[in-house]
Length: 120
Length: 120
DNA sequence: AACGTTGTGCTAGGTTTGCAGTACAAGCCC
DNA sequence: GGGCTTGTACTGCAAACCTAGCACAACGTT
Image (cartoon, rainbow over all chains, first blue to last red):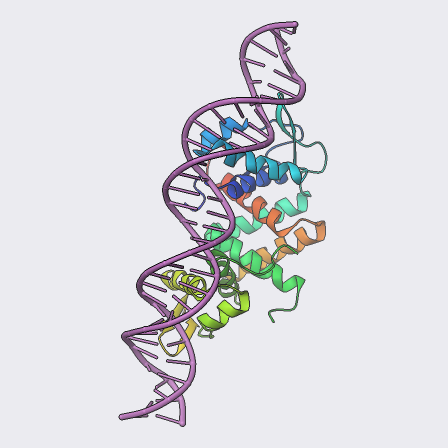
């Protein structure tokens, strides 16, 4: 029980971002309204709106004023290979009893190593 | 450039947690002093101390007052299989131009799916 | 035993972030 | 065209978090 419900704008952003880039939310699919999302997660409208704003800035969603918010057409879903590796990683972690938060920390550490010299 | 320098206690916590669980910081190895860490990352001592406290609560490190802080003996490093899957995931993501933050969001999404029914 | 190192604790202050409630503007839909 | 849906904006307020600086306690080192 590591990922309860999101409480901040960043967490809501991450939630939808993950759903979109993992393909759980397909091209053109509609997201809940800002008000609905706010209600669902028990946060203020402004907080949900902020998350949507951020997603739109990154081109992941398209908002039209009275028509709601939809996943932006095209460049949303990550390549299949990436999804599969993510799934394999998740399964290995869960099988070994490694928490989600720890898995993320491990991913960050591994990422860093491949990108730049170890640590200064 | 997604993982600049940590600015909050949580981020510092995650940084060391990742280093330890990924094996970059081995058993018994010494961490920088609280003051040093604070200086390195440009945060207040209290912030660095808070991160250390959290790591100690989770049994990842052991602090002795004048002897510094060291990685707790034993149960620190995640199983090799987990590390390898993490590395594979990171490589796939970087190769596909998927950012670290997005990769984390994908991992979260995938994790959720395997644990509980899709979405309510 | 004396000194220096190191983790901890505290206070006061500032910044960020979210909440609540309301009002508004845009435009879909009948 | 008219009503209703939906995203946006703004105000005042509160809570959480970090900063800065200092003081202290514990303990290794010489």
